[in-house]
Length: 91
Image: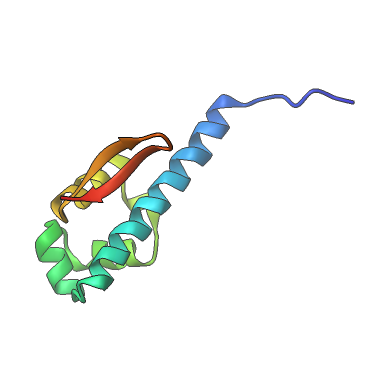
């Protein structure tokens, strides 16, 4: 029975990637719910159309967690602590 070697850097990268994808899915769901076009999304989030396309296709390499967090903020969502951790809630 071997001991699993923990690679904290690899684990952190995996966690960061999952968080980015989750934020992108959240932003996309808000935009879909509001029936926004790519042009409207770009105007609201202050990004060009190719970035909107990348966002919709979940191409996370083009976005940082900070940028995605700011996008959710612009859409009217804020973090709220709960027993389960942080959640984005509409204000």
